[in-house]
Image (cartoon, rainbow, N blue to C red):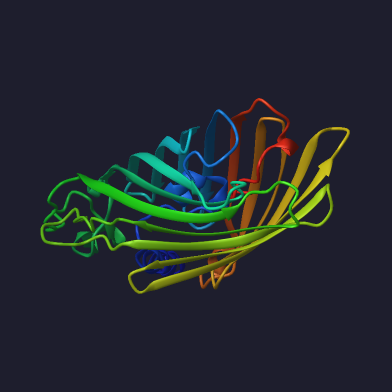
Length: 329
């Protein structure tokens, strides 16, 4: 019983510190999720992406799950897209469903259109709900029949409701160099979320959701015609919380199979180490990853963190090696 209470306290403090927003290890596998300015930034007709993540299964019989699906397409210098995502956590069935639409505009800054700046916005809403009757509170503990929690006792908590809807407004910008045969393809982006700082609470009274900022950068190094490496960094800031993620992706092109083999290593500072692998062939990209927990929760999670899988289909009219370099990869 004592061990369970300690685990609950650690998870609660961890969740409070991290905030209520979605979290992915393969963050740039979902470009519209990472930065609205990446909407439609690819050489193709349209793109659909789906991603699923589950975590804390080792310490919670109802693990945290995240799922999303997005669609985007370029139109001349514009990009348009939409994203649906859902986050579910804990025994109280906390759920956050989000629907967003996005638009981006790309401006080439050189005659060859290799240097580009894209700016984008994202808007929509999030519906959050919780079944508070599934929770237990301190005044529901009773010593009757050996002690335990009695859910029939009034918890005396003033809930304003079990469901809320909050508006969403986000913004992003990115610079990227897209020449296919270049030795280096650098990119740097910035995105800001929760610009409206909406009220978010199931209780009465104000509770503002703080803005969240992403800064991400990297450079694709084309080592040979068939091998690339991509060191990158993501810095997230939300209120007083700051998270740094360092990653290294690599790809090897199998000429006869016309397939890229992909691998990656991610380190989130004082949180987790994630390894990934996957493949990209023609229109399809599939990746899986697994997190090994390194935070203070490690003694209870035994190092086990989260499993993640992503799949992308991109409609193209040419072979993958003939297009421009997308800042996503």
